[in-house]
Length: 406
Image 1 (cartoon, rainbow, N blue to C red):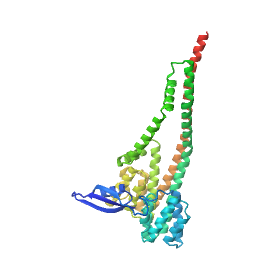
Image 2 (cartoon, one colour):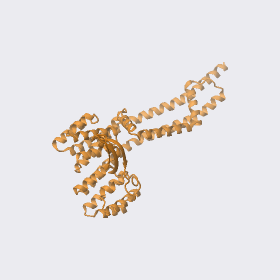
Image 3 (tube, helix red, strand yellow):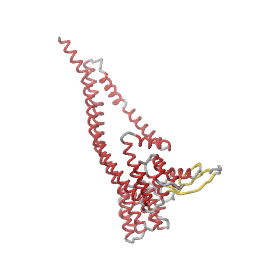
Image 4 (cartoon, one colour):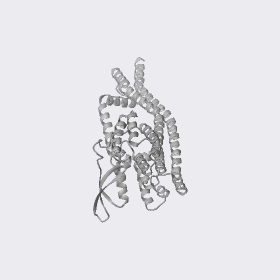
């Protein structure tokens, strides 16, 4: 977790300041609001001078999974913590991870806890990883926590790989279609336009004229399209960097036809897998929900989790606030309720995660099977439209030539 300084106002209007740890600034803001304070300012504390702010950058999930598995094996064999970090530092092929391990080794050797040292690299280690490491340190079962981290990351890598694999062919078809259309519009259409000018064709059919105008715009003012694209991308990123913009974008992701359902299933799988992993590691329910809110991947669902956390603090059962949020399907709410009553909530969450990961895989397979023929038909229609539009004036020319010969 990162350390934040905050300034707040209590219900009497008095201003207070303080420092605390949190997954991120947004989660801390929600936590303070839950407690009845008005947040004035939140700023992250600098985490020392040995590393750049934010650490050395992101590390691939696959590399982190291997690191966790090897780390756990050596700890289980009785190797000291500092020695493990030194060996892993020499073994890894990832330059960023090697720099991070050098820093971790030095900090742990100087007396700092592993979780706090890892917290200085928030881009490399997610709140989930930090929460599990902290729980392992407190319970004296660090090697088990590392095994759970490795298992979680392996599941995440596998899900991402399946999504990437399923989308590879449609993306290739889309790029090929785009390339073909650009070639036809920028090269073929100008050739026909020159031919029509030489033949003295003046009254072009509407489709042909539209294509000629489009071709002239693409070939002569291509820079306008590039600038427009860059402006749209920059404007979108600036918009989603704000709290309101991020909420709007995440709400659209959940409601967009077809793909909204897929995104919701991915979020549910991530929520269940993360929550189950934290609970089975001994992390308290309130801390687990705060961690989940920071890694679930959708601010709307994150707000629902934090609101549920506030209700649980007041003594409610877990399933009830989840149901009221309307962000969690009835099956999830029911299984969470059963798990809570039977004392097997972590097992129920793992089953929910397995179910939704399977649903994500089958949904992606169905979407891929449906998208491929649609894209091929669409490409055929566009190419056919271009070809027919270019030959329409030729029919008029041939008819005029036939009439003059008679």
